[in-house]
Length: 252
Length: 319
Image (cartoon, rainbow over all chains, first blue to last red; front, side):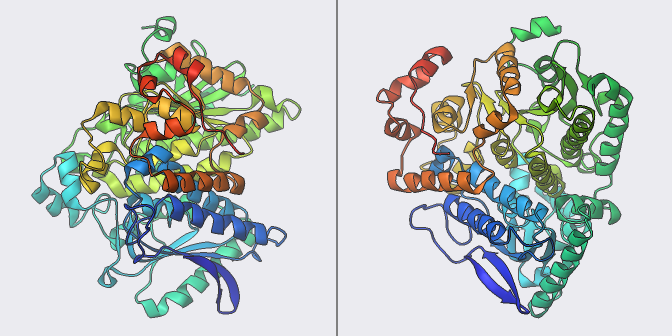
């Protein structure tokens, strides 16, 4: 479902995947699955928002609010024949463009945020908020049983390790430690206020020309700060150092 | 094997390092964060799994003519080329360096953007997120898509797909988001891999043991007909390199017309295609080939690349 709404009087674009709907044209699309039609429709809502506010200045542009409860992208033969990878990619590029053009993009995880579907509907936001797990929120790539089957790792050992490893196990708290979620909002009642507060914070950063503390890059910094992903920055710093040593050969 | 010998080798059989070396001009490749640096996954040992000194991806820089070409080459022999924290950071690092090189080229050669414009080439061989470090892998994918958007209007990103694992999962949409896609008939591209479709939806939906079905659905020839692959070439290293060089020789403004997604107009075109998917509801990719004017659809999988290119009718693009 896409449309315009007012949040504390301010016009926002809302993009919420419908966790109850069944798509009669594509049988693998049901209960919140994001298929080709859904992803392109979501992308259109983003491009329409960019178009509508193209003459407004940064900080004035309408925010986009993504409400996330999706179990995955559509896994079907017709989808692969026509290229489902383009649909989910198209929505991500649209959101990234909106963000870089000065729209604040906030995602609120209220249910399932799983794998590729979370990548397209959520992970391109400036900030990501999530309800705690007692509200049924799930963030992961796949359940441990599937990880065990595919990696051929012992399920009992995985379960034991999953208690403390944020890097592969399911959980909103773990995602928070990796910098994948900016804030865990204690209850649904606080969500409206939290979304509005984050929009203001993001707008302020954009007005100040700061594009490093929002979006996937900002969450990379958070991941290091919270101790969940500390190797990532070391790898990039090393590459930069090594490139600098040979740059004269490549930059003419 | 040296650079010259590599050119006549099968791309499908090549390791990631050989592909990286051979795609750029002879003797110009410098690996960054290579195996000697031992930037290994901190997460795999906790699971009792072996590490690889390059974490399954070769990253570096070379030249094509006077242009710096930043290379990402994934290694399917290590956990299927899957992306974890280090692998993803190496990919992101390449994008960062290329964007920096672009700024530098603009500063030094404001009047000759084409000659010195950097490029990124990604030789995909991956199933997407590495499940052993799934959450970090997922976050890395988002970062790469963000950086992909940063390249728009600045420098070309070319996907080359012709290795054993193919290009699936999250890397399927990374490939879709590039400016141009080169594949061999042996290349495979998709979002949900055949095994996962079978596991989720059953054998009636997709029989993952049927090699020709996989080829018809995800292979280079099919993607070429659909316009999801821009250049179809033989499974030979030199064929991929020639295709890359030809793309980079195009004016940037022409090359970006190969994009499939990344603008409202392109999304509208894809929505038209999705409406066709619903109307046609094909049982097999062959039904779609026939719809686009390939009467002899049964014969297409058997043709050599040259013959195929001579007879294949492609979807007509609207944008």
